[in-house]
Image (cartoon, rainbow, N blue to C red):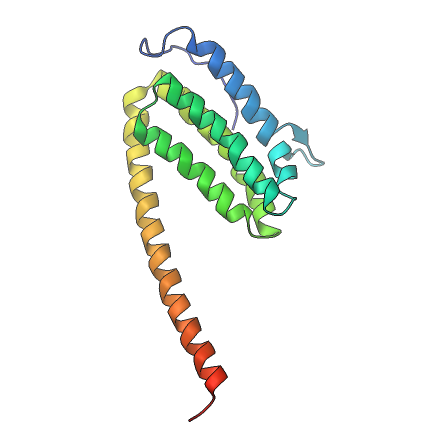
Length: 169
């Protein structure tokens, strides 16, 4: 995910937003792409922080939240902000899984995704709002399905554990 300078900024955002966009692009690069690995793959400081159990992932989510906060100050619509928050939540939740979470964090790059969303919003507000609406709707549906599956799995596990501890009657 490569950054570019917006060709035209929607007048709603004004010229002052250009400095904020540049700052956020730099932060996203630092968090997601600043370290080059052998083979050309890039990770960022956030992937290294994720190696510290719980604390590192929490700190990563807090750093990522700064981008969303600045986007809100620029006046980005709620749908787009919600999509940005979901990107961070996905990275944060999966990041809690030891090993797999660290690999996912290095590949998902929520900060880059969010800055790219912000840049698209500044250039093409209508298209970004519509696309974000679909993303948010789909993400919410998947979240509901996942919650139901986890609930069913938990009930089945509790029944199995209860039967195993009581033994045959």
